Length: 152
Image (cartoon, rainbow, N blue to C red; front, side):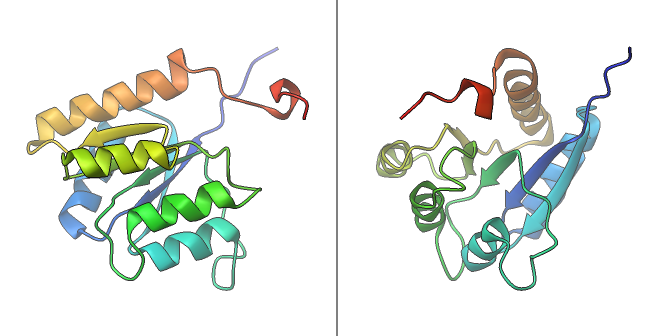
């Protein structure tokens, strides 16, 4: 019997066109089987994740790459909303942002981000970060499933 590996569904929440393109290039070069969906502000991110109007046909993501500096609703508020929504609270969220401010890092972990990464300033270093994400989330990490959730 042959196992078929389905592509990982990634939601990128990013407003900067250059960073969107950089992420697309890095993911494509990583040979990670993926589908990348992009929303450009926090308001769209929340609507997408909840499958609200305009996003009712969306594919539920396996992983969110979340910038903090977003228009309309900032990334911290998006993360807070994700963790407060029962259907989304276990969704893996990687904060991927330019900020290396201690307060942003602390707040992200307080809001239960799974990981905090500062965006590198070069394509090669960005590729390294994407490789680390790929290796961790697809090889090292054992994802939670309904079968392994702890009983309440």
